[in-house]
Image (cartoon, rainbow over all chains, first blue to last red; front, side, top):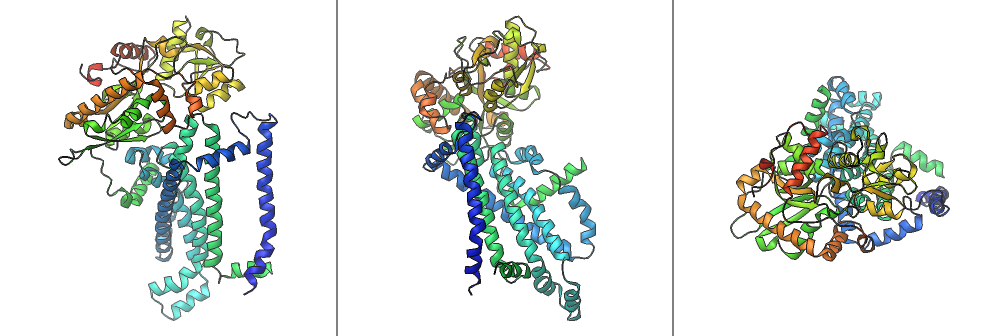
Length: 268
Length: 322
């Protein structure tokens, strides 16, 4: 069981390089306004933004907004993942259904979710449902397409074996399709999570449903430039955290999978 | 069209679970002894300070109204919200309401919102140029680019009024739509020649060396009513008692805010991100309790002359009966 430890030690070098990159960007953004390369009233230095962030963390409104954003994001992502997975497995396994729906899917998928904002506002006003509609619409396709790819990826020999053993529909989904599709599902969830966060903030920013996006809009309308950047920074941190968390979950859920095992072996 | 329809059907199918449980009904009377729950759609700007102050002072609670204030991103969200029943009342500029009325949207103004100070050179919004601009009067904006927050709305009407008043041809001004926060940078970089910011951006541009060349609210009409609180005609008809109580509370709030500017400034720091130091420097709007009907008549005439309104709006139908 020494593998994870060793992998962790080797992983420290890229992590350090990544942190160094962040520090370099922070220093560049600190110096640019101080040297007068960009006007400080529109692009405050990093230290001002961080000081403002500390102040924001003490406002109860900030925590309420953070909670609202997380709730919208979570509900939207949950519905999209569940709907996308079920739809993907059904479309992928029922004969003929894939051919019948593929043109429709290719038709609907490229519609930018934000184009639905006027419709969402008419249906739900400035309520959370408006933003949820955008979030679900955008992240559902990420999920569906991944699951569809996963379902068709079933090894022909395994499929024939399952047929020889006369596995029923449920057993085939459970023991054949699901393990094959799982890596795709997990990747789909990670991609959908990022898209869902983008659309959550977009909806809050443009429609004004409660959350960090709305706080950013209010700060902007108040000409409060440092608070605006501080809140933008928080949304960025949310995205990074989510991505790291989903990558960690991916390694855990797929510990048995050859792709992950190969990575671990290579790290030795 | 098919694509939109399909998207709509798809989105609707997806959202059926989420849609359940949200009723878009106008407020029904509460059970006996309970206060009316009222949700008002407002914008997080200086103009709505009185309603926040009135809530804090208990002017609504004393009239059996449990007031919730929801900030939204402008009339595009508030008007459908009021029609759909999410909001019982909303806040909007009066040109948007005149336009809505000309499209026969069933809306009714219940109370004044905020007015121009009426003082030339000391209003809460003005036509501005950057410090070293050669432009000194609105007449010189012919052929120039002017940034306003929304095209074909109140800012365009009043800026045109300034150009006309200075003896210029307003049809030769090139309007550019731009959010208020972007105006300072656009003026500085020469992307636009002039802009029409309101507070807090007017003060920010002035602090950066910008100059006001005209007070467009003042040029449009004396003591112009800029915005108002409105409701749907359905709420007006079915909940007349509630509308009356809301209007009375609102009038008390307006009068209080107008006579206690320091408290109004303080409350602004609670629902915006404007700091106490910044708010002290801003020019506040006026908050008279009564709508300036003559100014709306004048504004409607200007909007008709500009072709923004196609027909004479029926002010009697839009405004509360005196």
